[in-house]
Length: 264
Image 1: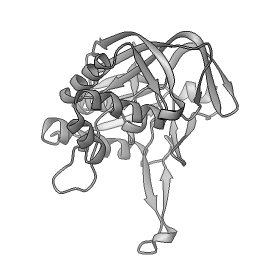
Image 2: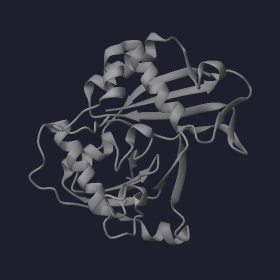
Image 3: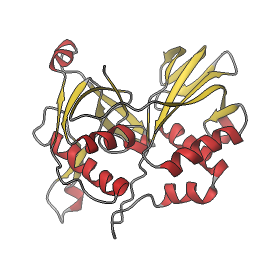
Image 4: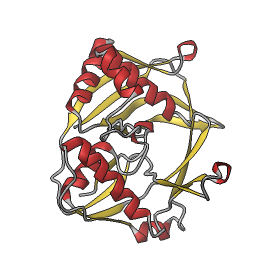
């Protein structure tokens, strides 16, 4: 399910860092904590796990901030009015219920940022959005960058290992997206899909128009994460496509990566 919040800055000049993803992730946990401290702590500290795996999936994603009157000012983004839209999505009912309950329990405001530098916004509307009809072939565009990575190097020399963010034109990009979706699908439905067919193809015309410059780098707590933003087509198991739509395509959904909307 997907929730859209519409809000506007309280002051005439609301300033956030351009790399605001960490602030939005923190806000989500804060909102959920208003509804359930236990669930917020579980989601933050553990997440949903497959078997004895140490890695937990948060199973939510969110969009970049859209709309409003804003301008970039060096490393900041300055909002001066208008209505800002923010979408948050998850296939987990508990998450959505605590999110919506948490929003309403804190009144008409949301505050983004640390306690000593909070930026206040007035909430105008909270709504759930209709789901598309999931089919074996669909077209989407990005509301936040899609990222997927792999570790390269020669173990056990860990000092030589590094994280490589895959680009859409690399051979193992589509396979890496699929493997991530299969894991999420197991967590959401309780089992892996019988047919794990999945392919993703970037809109070539759009990429040519952008001269191949479709990557976006976001700094999250001091770490640069590279993803891409472009229209694309997916073909394969509709169940995997649905999980991607609701939990995010690729990795780091809870950091604000992988949210898409259907192109109709």
